[in-house]
Image (tube, rainbow, N blue to C red; front, side, top):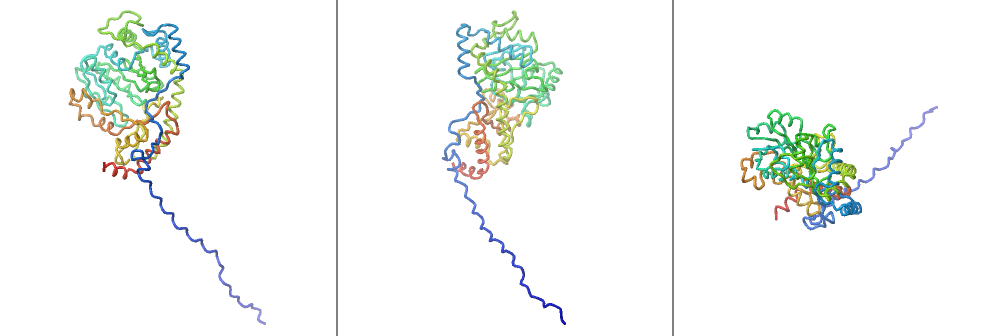
Length: 428
């Protein structure tokens, strides 16, 4: 008996058919430039112009109360009680023996030159605000322009030393961007050659090097309290020194008001800070730590928003242990970014983002030095390179995180459309 069961033929298992592939989405065309950028006709990204200055100021109620106090006292200037109080509080904060408040930083630099008894030539960077060499000119000193380090934007001992000769009496170093020059090596160089060292520290209020507040280096440091700085007295400045004799000379040069004793000086001036200036300074000093915290927050937002943009590098202070994050400075590599710095500036300006070039032109290419000292016009390649590539973005009391997001988006969009923008602007 055949027990084998017949082989049953089975149809192959029917697997579900794969779904039909969806047709690829058609790439949406980029909006025309007229719709994408204010420079070509679109609405600006910001409703009102946004400047770069810090503009940290006290509330009107606090300022009004301080001004009423001044009027009640009827003491308006001549090294009054508020100016004295501001000097004392700054000296305590900056851990320096002497703070001499003045009406602005430029007069402070002039006073420093006079008090140090400088003659002949002074070495300084051309990569600085034009007031720095002009202070030398006011005191009949000749600027010797030095190139800067391309990475730090500061002068170095290695670049300075070949410029020292018998006519050089000092080095005027400039601390930029909330960063600092290499003070120790500069001091060693100055000591080796028997010359003076002083600093234009207009950007450096609140910064520290190795835990030591800027203001304690060299013979004297000069700070700016202009309205655009993170610490402001609306207009003003101060000189910081640990040299008792130098401080006495500075106070007598500023004026006899506030001088502890008569000191022989060749010239005097009126560099006094008014009580109204000091009042704003004292109020802003109360708020200074909060301003630093806000600056740090804004800087971090810029870092996050700009990090992926090709050809743009954000300057970050590297020689300080504490910075004030006062400046948001970017270097634009035209080849990698796709647009020149100046073309990007024009795009941003049309969007009401009032970014700035720093420093442009360099001091060596500015009047009067371009004519008086022509030997430097083509002698400072790193300075010229930075002058052509740097851009400062808005930061400070008027700037919000939302605005920073908009600024970063506009810069990224400019790079995305770089080819079309170049072509369109070339037609003009």
